[in-house]
Length: 440
Image (cartoon, rainbow, N blue to C red; front, side):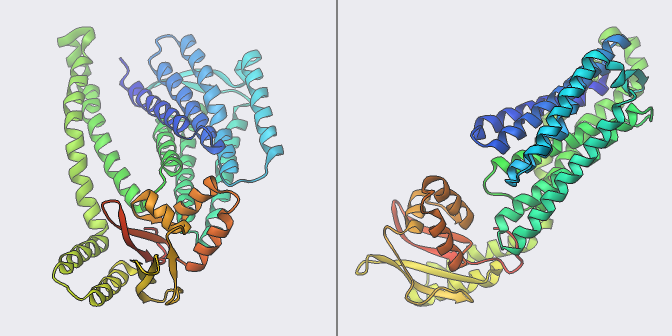
């Protein structure tokens, strides 16, 4: 058994799961459908190449390589089309040309396959395709499309930051970082031109697919530094789990064959299973330590908020309590302003009781029981970001969401935190933008 086939085989299964997840959850979204097709293309490529690595005959390896080329062909095109659709750009002519070129390439693969892959060469990791006379065009197309996608994302990211669309900017930052990683997948092309470098492009492909999926499916994004930290810890554990049995198999292969015969690879697999069972515990411990180091400031203000909660029990003066909350939250979390609204029985509205900072809300600001903000907080019963509320009304009330969006922009509020006792909303707290422009 060729253990070098195992990582791409596992990776192909992961991308298949990701593509299926995206399609199930977001099949009404054009960008999401394109992203799922991107994942399926990666699956075809990795599955075919894993099969190529374990091939005994070069003719079989070449057939599998050429089948995998279909996946390779569509990866950059689906990636670029996804970005165009996500950014709502008009590039119909370019997209049409790209898909037409792909159809021509498939016809060439069927009629003159040697122009794509003229053969295979055996490297230490197994058989690998050798580029034909036209293959360099596809390598160039890969680099050009992924670079262009990254440029479009960077332009959109700069625009979003200027317009203070911090959630949108954070999502674009994920996408931009994803494509930066994806460009390194081009290392796989070197082996096809005879350079003996292990094709680790499956790693960048899986990371790209995972980050893109997270940025599309997940509504509330984690700070990208947190994602990178968790990704780094996961990668270390992943390499540890695969590396030990893999290295052991390479060094002790001859001895294992003498002792166990044709089933020699059972023992490295057994070691891998044992180590893998320890993986989750090791990952959890390392992740906790890394996050504590990275987010000392956030952990500190979280403890400050807990201390406020403890003080509330002993504070009888409501006005003094509200002053304490707004001041402490603003200073510890680092926000432009904090405001608290409480229900007033006589006015039958939520009125502004206390504010701290440079907020634009007036003293007589109030929210009626049928106000759009109040209605949404009643429905969600949890902290809500401004852009979540805007997106909700954009889909549920397309005729009036522009007015709601305008009013929310005027309020300059980024986070809404409701106060509930069972089903009754006693009030809510509004937080402005963070002073460091980071997302919540």
